[in-house]
Length: 190
Image (cartoon, rainbow, N blue to C red; front, side, top):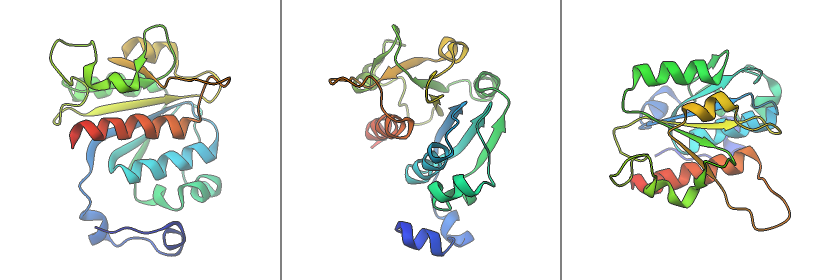
């Protein structure tokens, strides 16, 4: 499998053959009005690292080509599939229609949220691992850096997960939060 460090990523683009050899997972990372281009670029890099199928940029999220996204993405935005949707809700409604067995996981602090450690024991259904079933596509939604995931998206999410905070700070960077949740999901697939 092709593995390049940041310097190598900046210096060379993978070949079509190298990219074709990557088995993409049915993971869709949805950015609900993520505004910071560093975060957007970092989420492209994260999408590449977990072999996600697509990044969906919604609302006011900036889209490639962008020198600021490119810098943080270290070029990954050039080969990670992405699309734009006017709102995250519109995209997720379409996602549900196209993928009847899909799951929507919102990463947000909410009265309805569960700890990310409980993803495999989610209360959505009575059988184990309803979120991480291998054949079911998963949309992982992260939100605006200050306002979080929009309420209408939280209303359609199958599960809302949060990361426990034990210090004074009450939130983590969107890339860090997404990475923890995505790797927890991958852990269930292994």
